[in-house]
Length: 252
Image (cartoon, rainbow, N blue to C red; front, top):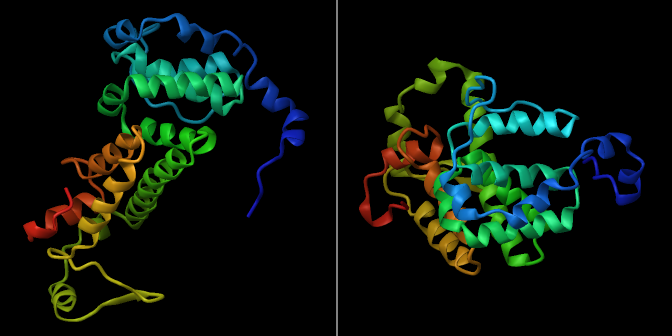
């Protein structure tokens, strides 16, 4: 596995310095802004800009932030400020100060950010906690959300690559019968999930809730897990929720 560059190597990378030119005052602006006002103000379109997800990373910081801003057109300004802090932290612009602002923002507005941010930015927030939080509990809790979502991302991307016919294939009756009559081995001692009755995910949810209760920002991870199973969010968790029939072992 390729290792991360150390601090010495990063210092001699011109590209790393270039990617944060102009970052100096951006994070500090939030120290003087009214969070309540930012929750009610909306990100205005610039030059007819429509809401669209940014793709890729521009070396120029203002250009990249303008791309990211486009993701939040019509949404509360606070969501864009949150994204702005993540960009500054990832570009190692006054990292300690900007992470402190980031964590203060989350502790002050946990409920609002959980409700308003999409999975892209909830996971980005968890990545940031994992990389920079001093509390090892918060880092461990955040990791569980990232593992959940990245596993789903891989699985759903594989379905996309397999094509619509494979994605829409109905459950095979003989396979369903096998699940409910005997152990179905997958690999390395792992057995298949028994669609409709299995208690594996219920037990995992109980454990997840217990771990998340150890830190006030554990709510982010619980929100991510719930979001994966929201109607319309087609992924393996929602599909198994739809297959599930035994109320005693439901996990949502």
